Length: 246
Image (cartoon, rainbow, N blue to C red; front, top):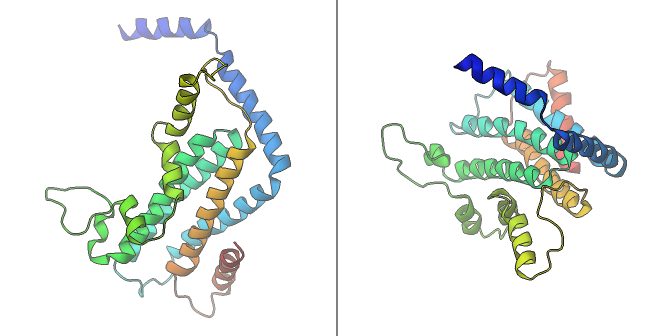
């Protein structure tokens, strides 16, 4: 049964029409070339900032952290695991998949809010995540939207990101309204197209998130080192300079 199904699938794939995927790959290549020409400075800055954050995080593992409060380790874990999403969002931006990049950026932003929650409520630090291991969660619970409101920050960033994250609501509502108003002239199909306005949104979100994480890794996750560790001091001085200039 399995061998027969495998053969049937192999036969089908051999004669299948996959021009759609080829066209997307061509679009990604063209978009990358445009992005390098028009936004090359941002690309250089991202590589510089991101590499410094990752390298600093790697070094932190091997330096003296005995002065860290009990909850700092969890915050460091959250921040470190968000780094992969940073690079994934960056590659999606280069590919021209703007909405998908924003969806990942929202996850990075939420990681920061969880870190912020832990600093505010260290005794309930593990409530930054809603998980239950045989017992009911007690204490103050994390809620990203309420946290931002409670602090009176009035950050619209989180709400804007959410519009793209939840089933690509922004694009769905936009197209739905166009259909309802009789303004939709084009077929509703999968579309990849360059959009400088969307590029600006993703780039600005990315720079905002980089500022946050540069300060996290240079100020919140502080470490002790000996005077002999000159390379460590040099590295930390560099990321602090990046944090200040960003």
